[in-house]
Image (cartoon, rainbow, N blue to C red; front, side, top):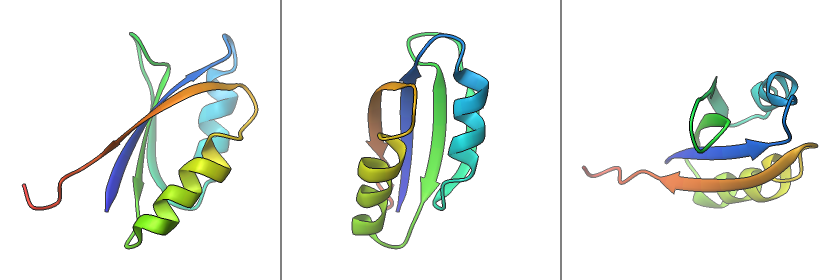
Length: 77
């Protein structure tokens, strides 16, 4: 399974948040972005439960995270 997590964080904390995200187990890639969201993270796992747990308990609880939006990919397409 693959998920993309769009994050908004506190102003000025983008670089430190990106570094923290890179240390999260399922996070494969992270980018800073312009526009409605500050950061885009790509996650991959064989387990939907592991993916959900990582997003809910690790990513959303990082310091300076204000909000997240998660997009799950459709593997068959």
